[in-house]
Length: 487
DNA sequence: ATGTAC
Image: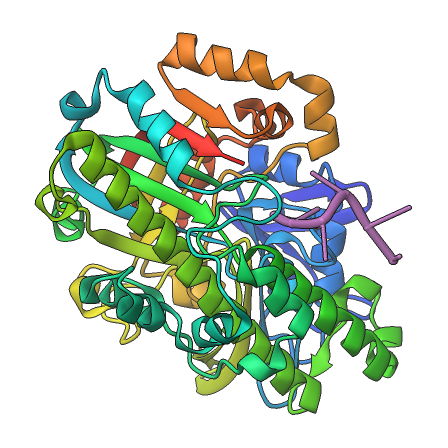
């Protein structure tokens, strides 16, 4: 007897615990899968996520299945929390399956401070960070520069930051691709995008982006936590932001170009928002080169914010940041496509792996995991909401088989921003977090706090439980917020 | 997410 889940006519069959499949029918090239508990699946089925996931299976060259992570929700064309691997020779690349905020992602910086060291200094710390780290909509970055420097950043990534004095060698060794995505071509990024990027290098932005000081509250795997350099009561800093106006403009530029030049393919797709460039076409190459450049921009963005954070801690604690061992644990991308080789039906194939609101989660032994972590697996950082805390996982043994080496990226929204603003008042949320939970929040805009109220998100514990039980990303430690700044 | 709109 097969267990089924009927979401207004979209019927999923349970393959096994936490694995639900939408069988191939009509124009679907492959089945679709949702990786979720029943309670998360109920939440996922409330918006257009399942319809968008089904639509995604129409994309040329999509391999095995379109997959939705446990934190999935609807996005532009393709679900946030979606993974689609398209053949790099005969398939396609789709900007909507990468996301508007190219290389939106998170990095975690460690310290050797304990909760006792920062306790009582929360207010001073949050004020100093808010002052030092540019945030909110519009311009203003750690550096404000010209187009020529933006072009360097686009092509050289964190290597540019190293030369400019905003990074140390060790930072590059603890970032995917060592902080420099190959195949980036600044000439494929429009002048308009570069202009928007000039004064936003080192800026948080708005929406769900934030910088949070956290303490480690729980350790689930002693050996892996030790390999990551994490222990109970340790203070860490989480930085969540993306490629700001530059990435947004780049996505928009290529969506319009692809719609114009590949209208034939567009007409065959169930949703215009899935516009895709056929693999091997000039536009596929150009978008890939521009997206890679925007990926580098986002890495530099997070690097400069981390640099500023080190300076703030040095100031507040009156000693050099090096003495506080403020080292990068890892930096994970949430919105990217990448050419990767995966085993499909017993043979190696090169695929454009699109991860939109999904995190790479390569297991121990994978050659692309940085040397420092190769024995235990890639660190995966899952930010929860302001009131919930976050997790560090490690890439699980089953991720390559189930999700092209991916897991969730956060708690996932439960309601739209508009709905959130109707349900919550920013100042009330801020006050409740401070007096109720001792979490100090400082934001440019009260509306942003309302949009990001903890109740707007799914239960991050449940999302992580599913990832852990599926073996795609295993729990290592949990953290809880101390103070948080946002746009 | 986003100079919060095509």
